[in-house]
Length: 178
Image (cartoon, rainbow, N blue to C red; front, side, top):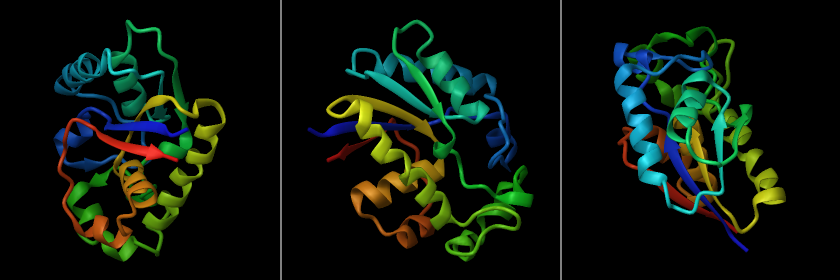
């Protein structure tokens, strides 16, 4: 049986609004982000979600807690779903961190990890998902690295293509884990 994965990005953080690449720092949602988290919960209510998995970083956990505060759905945080570790660049200007992100495809950010390493880390989550949630419909709240990992590992999109494209938000992506 297939497991259905619905992916949503964490809501807008204060760092997002200030143009900061939070990376492995927790961050917190902005006022607008909290409203969008409520909208996420409304949008996914009645969607058959049996469990919510979230990155353990504060902005993702906060998104999940707000979105599903009144539902009896387990919310499980997993460090493997984190954003790419920008190392000494965590918390720096998003323009500075992302303008040359192709150079970090295989080479780690200073004191951090490469995009390939981040995708591999997120990929380790998938076999464990099958152990308990095979055949279920689950929601994952994460980051760019989480999204790219699912696009690469489950949809077959080359990471080189993902890293070259601009991120365009939408209300969720769906994947099948065979």
